[in-house]
Length: 493
Image 1 (cartoon, rainbow, N blue to C red):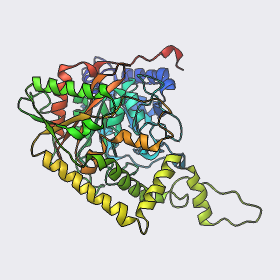
Image 2 (cartoon, helix red, strand yellow; image 1 turned 30 degrees about the horizontal axis):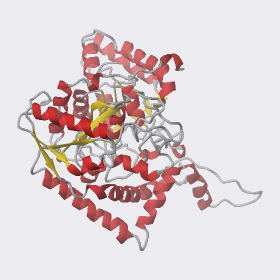
Image 3 (cartoon, rainbow, N blue to C red; image 1 turned 135 degrees about the vertical axis):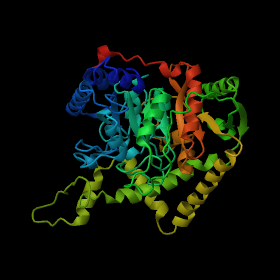
Image 4 (spheres, rainbow, N blue to C red; image 1 turned 135 degrees about the horizontal axis):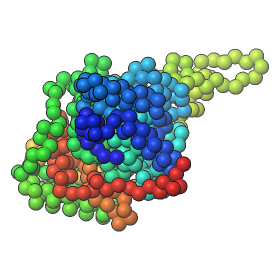
């Protein structure tokens, strides 16, 4: 499957019909997704109806949207009107939202075709998509390895050509890390630039919706559509409308790029380090000015993140009681026994998975009397220091380049029993969430085992146009984003 840009162009020019594109996508899903497990639900009927509508309008000479006929998948923690949305949790099994998330509505208004909902770590809590309440998603480059998380289903679907692009959510790296492990592009926007309305909440101050795509131009195109003020989201920014594609093809002569020494010290794989250092040399050859910089509080970023994120999660997930909200699990009782509200709540919450329970317990602990000041308040103070680190470094440079993940994709089951090892997968990405600044991951190489390696480009607040330009400059000079995984379709089905 080609890019969103090319698909939309061919459909508008009547070189191919929207129905043909959608049918080919659905057939591809049927062929390879049994092996990968990227989708929790495929919306075949709705997708074909939308494609037929687009073809009919084009036949009448009517205008269509910028993404007319483009097949796009949606992470299952982003609500879709009339389509089951579970956040990959048994506690939301059967939930049918009565409305679309703002980002989804804007995609529909641009005539994108929603082909399904993708798997994720339950409530977006995880870095491998092994914590789903339904199934494990596999990396298309190596089916014995994870696709990353929590947006692993979206990243795997894009890499496997079962959609042209997808939406994910990023709380501490959940768009960028799976994009890196699956060899695709993933962008986390500035906090508030894309509405969170309709995103099932994990950590309210950190969550962001963003695109996962095949190339940088598609990421910019989708950002043009989904970004902007939303009246339903009080954290939505009043930023002026931007065309993120406007400066994509401009040269980067004189641009200042920083290499944070702390990030490279945290890299656990020499091939990852080398790939990003090679990328820095390429940028230098293109006229960029490269210099080493320091973000001194990087080493305590992961601890800070997991205190704040889990504290917010424990508060946000308190609504899942089986009484006010969520599925209800009725406890078994003896004949004539009364059932009290707390019995229902306790029984319903057994539907949470192990990782979600762990994070609720950790979050409740750091918010409890006697520990609130020692942990939560201290973490908020450190968050301020991390924000200041970025503010200071962006006085010296225009953008930062780092590894996205400390290693390429690891094996399924390798870290699942070691929460600390799993949490450290986010060590390169949490800083951008804590500071509320944009960051993008793009493919920058492959390991000796043929696994994708991702490079992260971090920018100052509302500098999406700049980091997209920097990312595109690398993409023009390399072929990494064009390589595709080989999936043994003979064994699928």
